[in-house]
Length: 91
View 1 (cartoon, rainbow, N blue to C red):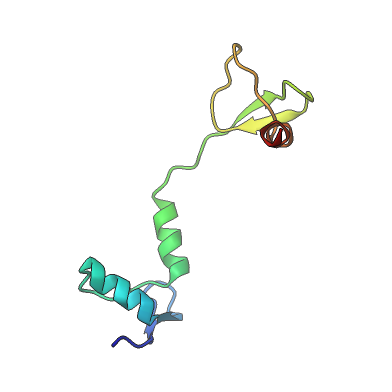
View 2 (view 1 turned 180 degrees about the vertical axis):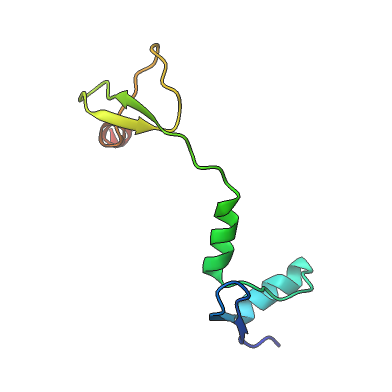
Protein backbone atom coordinates (compact mmCIF):
# COMPACT_ATOMS: atom_id res chain seq x y z
CA UNK A 1 0.00 0.00 0.00
CA UNK A 2 2.73 2.51 0.99
CA UNK A 3 5.96 3.05 -0.96
CA UNK A 4 9.09 4.96 0.00
CA UNK A 5 9.03 8.60 -1.14
CA UNK A 6 11.91 10.99 -1.59
CA UNK A 7 11.13 14.42 -0.12
CA UNK A 8 13.13 17.64 0.06
CA UNK A 9 13.82 19.25 3.45
CA UNK A 10 12.49 22.80 3.64
CA UNK A 11 15.31 23.87 6.00
CA UNK A 12 18.52 22.43 4.52
CA UNK A 13 17.30 21.49 1.03
CA UNK A 14 18.65 17.94 1.27
CA UNK A 15 16.59 15.03 0.03
CA UNK A 16 15.41 12.43 2.54
CA UNK A 17 13.37 9.25 2.33
CA UNK A 18 9.88 9.10 3.83
CA UNK A 19 9.74 5.34 4.26
CA UNK A 20 6.68 3.15 3.85
CA UNK A 21 6.85 2.34 7.57
CA UNK A 22 6.89 6.03 8.49
CA UNK A 23 3.95 6.64 6.16
CA UNK A 24 2.02 3.83 7.84
CA UNK A 25 2.81 5.33 11.26
CA UNK A 26 1.61 8.77 10.09
CA UNK A 27 -1.62 7.20 8.78
CA UNK A 28 -2.22 5.33 12.07
CA UNK A 29 -1.77 8.56 14.04
CA UNK A 30 -4.09 10.44 11.68
CA UNK A 31 -1.45 12.88 10.46
CA UNK A 32 -2.57 14.53 7.22
CA UNK A 33 0.70 16.15 6.09
CA UNK A 34 4.01 14.62 5.07
CA UNK A 35 7.11 15.67 7.02
CA UNK A 36 8.74 18.82 5.69
CA UNK A 37 12.12 18.42 7.41
CA UNK A 38 14.75 15.70 7.42
CA UNK A 39 15.52 13.87 10.67
CA UNK A 40 18.61 15.99 11.39
CA UNK A 41 16.69 19.27 10.96
CA UNK A 42 13.73 17.97 13.02
CA UNK A 43 16.11 17.00 15.84
CA UNK A 44 17.95 20.34 15.68
CA UNK A 45 14.64 22.24 15.79
CA UNK A 46 13.40 20.16 18.72
CA UNK A 47 16.62 20.63 20.70
CA UNK A 48 16.77 24.37 20.02
CA UNK A 49 13.66 24.84 22.17
CA UNK A 50 15.25 23.12 25.16
CA UNK A 51 17.26 25.17 27.60
CA UNK A 52 20.80 23.88 28.07
CA UNK A 53 21.20 21.88 31.27
CA UNK A 54 23.08 23.68 34.00
CA UNK A 55 25.96 21.63 35.37
CA UNK A 56 27.51 21.98 38.83
CA UNK A 57 31.00 21.10 39.99
CA UNK A 58 31.48 18.83 43.00
CA UNK A 59 34.19 16.64 44.50
CA UNK A 60 33.70 12.88 44.29
CA UNK A 61 33.15 11.43 47.77
CA UNK A 62 34.99 8.22 46.84
CA UNK A 63 38.05 9.16 44.75
CA UNK A 64 38.28 12.94 45.29
CA UNK A 65 38.25 13.84 41.57
CA UNK A 66 36.21 16.75 40.27
CA UNK A 67 32.77 15.73 39.02
CA UNK A 68 30.20 17.64 36.95
CA UNK A 69 26.62 16.91 37.96
CA UNK A 70 23.23 18.21 36.71
CA UNK A 71 21.98 19.11 40.20
CA UNK A 72 23.01 21.46 42.99
CA UNK A 73 25.04 19.30 45.40
CA UNK A 74 24.14 19.54 49.08
CA UNK A 75 26.50 18.89 51.96
CA UNK A 76 24.30 16.19 53.52
CA UNK A 77 24.56 13.72 50.59
CA UNK A 78 27.67 12.31 48.87
CA UNK A 79 28.35 13.04 45.19
CA UNK A 80 30.25 10.59 42.98
CA UNK A 81 32.02 11.01 39.63
CA UNK A 82 30.65 8.99 36.74
CA UNK A 83 33.32 6.27 37.07
CA UNK A 84 32.73 5.72 40.80
CA UNK A 85 28.96 5.88 40.35
CA UNK A 86 29.09 3.22 37.61
CA UNK A 87 31.36 1.09 39.79
CA UNK A 88 28.93 1.30 42.72
CA UNK A 89 25.97 0.56 40.46
CA UNK A 90 27.59 -2.65 39.18
CA UNK A 91 28.17 -4.03 42.69
